[in-house]
Length: 64
Image 1 (spheres, rainbow, N blue to C red):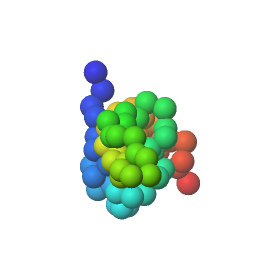
Image 2 (tube, rainbow, N blue to C red; image 1 turned 135 degrees about the vertical axis):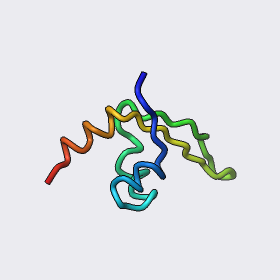
Image 3 (cartoon, rainbow, N blue to C red; image 1 turned 45 degrees about the horizontal axis):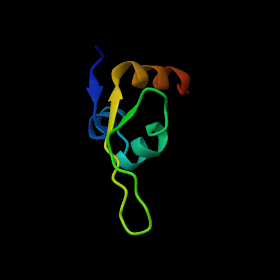
Image 4 (cartoon, rainbow, N blue to C red; image 1 turned 90 degrees about the horizontal axis):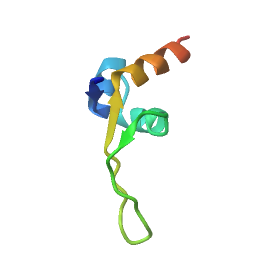
């Protein structure tokens, strides 16, 4: 079973903001979204859990 990281954990590791993690990793396959769906009257909450293998694959594919 893979380790799951929070956006705060990933942001700390990559030295970026949590907003950047949400934008760049929120739609990757394998990332689990535990949040709620929003509509016009309710705010959407995003609660992500990022498996360590997904993070490692993302880093390999986006290495400069």
